[in-house]
Length: 374
Image: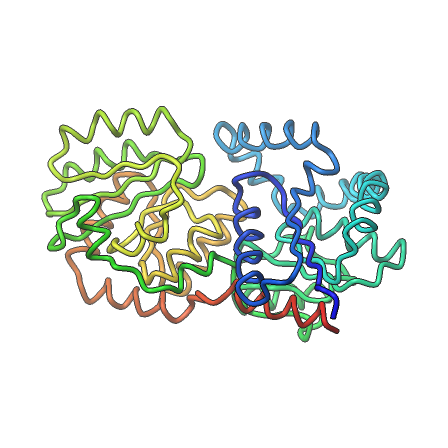
């Protein structure tokens, strides 16, 4: 029997979209080691120069003019104006796409971002490609660039997302509520006591995990200072990501804090750090919140990016799994309040467990293999 070939498409290195694709790849290899899996940064493959410009522009807008992104995100007028450009880009990329498809000959394709999903969907329609296509959403709400008739299955994380797809003509039977894919290791038991001891935490104190995504975005330095003003005993783990300026400041500042603070830059140990934490203060990127939910962590949301993260915030707060802070000072007050109200904290933790989907990547991998065998 021939080995099954799975093509995974994402955009941008070190993005949530890539992490989601790699989580699915890992789950596939655990289920079927003999399968051939190819994960491709589709934007870099088709438009490497444009990718650099767009990534740089996006980060610049998010940091300096978030209101511009808020206007652009899922704006029907903008979507209509970009349709012709999108069609042109898809046609322009079809030659390179044909080379990839002809060489790898996938039995199934899964995309963790709307750009490659739309590109493959249009290719299927234009050239009669008869390969199952799965769209894997990595946020809580599907925007307009996700809707294609030739997508065979959509993976979502909630009934809210399902309803949005159905409203736009996607048959309900095509939609699977499996969740945002996270690394399968998040389902494994972790020696929290051993990890805490290794990094110097006090097992008798609550631990607050602070994150700002891969870029270390948001008022994290201000938050650390605000937490230093409250009197409640606690300890911090702060992940600065690739933000070297923030990391260096934290390393200097931690010596004068009234509490223990453990500082990380970019790290692959988020699973372990979440396992020893009491709650998390973070911007609500899709992968981060899904990982936090899998670890039973109540969430304080700080500095969400307009658009996708604002929608993630709406979902989490409506489910009672998170509260939103309007500033660093507000986040510190909410942290103090939650740590001092065990019944409220446990109520949030119960809501977290109710909506968590820690098996997401394994469930998605099983669907992919079913499609490959059909």
